[in-house]
Image (tube, rainbow, N blue to C red; front, side):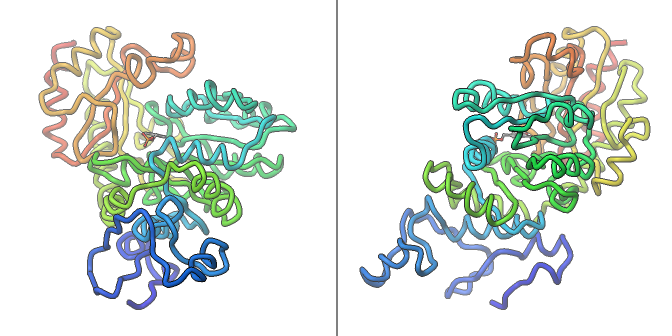
Length: 397
Ligand SMILES: *Cc1c(COP(=O)(O)O)cnc(C)c1O
């Protein structure tokens, strides 16, 4: 196959074609390589590969051709020099921290990150002497003030889950750079189809491929992207020694997912915007949180920083937990599950599920009220989604 140079093509084309080298069988769809190890032609070749004198596959904990194809395609999509794929989104975050931090280092983290990310920092990284401070995502002066001489990493997700708050990535990257701190952005909600943090000055991008990159809720995976030294050497070095590498089967699912990512993200964003506008007019809904709405305080920033508003929104009903649960329980089609980024629309009550482990004070500070409902809008007809939600909402008035 002719070499595909991503720099010559548009993003939609890169998502379909980058990263794959056809084998001698001339297959059209990407091949899966379910093999744990690779064979050498001689003892001398084995020695040279192990010694790093000649490149090539050794063992699938280190490299695998299907996994590499996924890594190279995603790297091209994010504009990264280097990508390492991992067994899950959490192992991408773990590998980043283990690869780049050491005892005595300090992390400043947005308080609105995926719940398990805070568990990893508070309960596990803390045991190895890594300290963490939490700040409100969009408050740039709070990031600056929380920075200490030993701060090594800023960590954020934008937009946040479930309230759709944003941080100005370019401005935060400037604060980080001035202080010699690395900025990592978990780009799970936008994906490179809608937002490219490295172009805005971030040093590292993290993915849970489990969500939109797969897009159909089939398997777990993750990735870390950035420069060749930090990601290609340090994060990769941890991964090949510790072992939470991506399986070739899952890499193949994600490769196929990437091919439709641009189409899907556009459809998720259009559906979510239509649902947000419909919810805003419903008399039982007190507030809708979605960056695509003109009244969202960071609507203009979302328009500059993202090329779409994404597929996740949340809304508040009066009557607290009882009312929120009754809206959820009266749906017949929406899936009551915490996963997101699926063709199927999912609905969840953050205060008692994804954010249930936070103290009531922490939830309050983050705006996770008892009346809040999150919808990760899928690819069904939006009228059907509205009818399903109307059943419970119409009875609340
Ligand atoms: C789901 C999620 C993760 C964790 O990913 P897993 O694949 O479940 O390990 C990390 N960050 C964000 C924003 C997520 O939504």
